[in-house]
Image 1 (cartoon, one colour):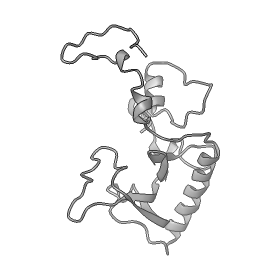
Image 2 (image 1 turned 135 degrees about the vertical axis):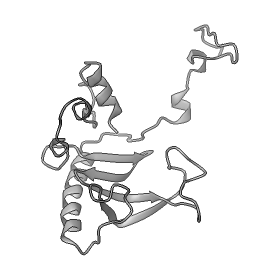
Image 3 (image 1 turned 30 degrees about the horizontal axis):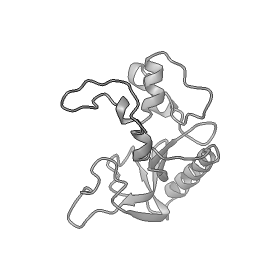
Image 4 (image 1 turned 120 degrees about the vertical axis):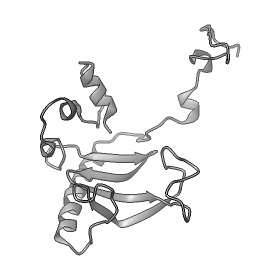
Length: 176
């Protein structure tokens, strides 16, 4: 989901120009009669939808097609990862080469990948590979979705509740 770019648009704030922003504004999709196929999805100047787990690209979507390069490895008998119920990064991965490709218009639950022997698979693979390669060529540095724990909370004295259960804080630096 492109929350950052969409929320900026909802607040009438232009995206920052000092860094690349890979999201697209989905607000028109929710607020207007906006044909889905006209969204920016494809290799000809469009962005597609990269999906990351940490810093690893696990899937890439272009239009009606979504390719999975890595999928979570479930424990037998489970349909979720008990180690990581929210992000699925700690489950371990099954790598797919060639990738699993789904037509999410026909199969929104991503239950049956396209057969690699079909023209649809070959067309989707070419489209996604071109868009994915373009996306990766625009990246600079770290692609992690979430900060390392030390980066996320490096100044605990500035967190909203630094004296639980008495949530009042003074903005003073601890002695070093």
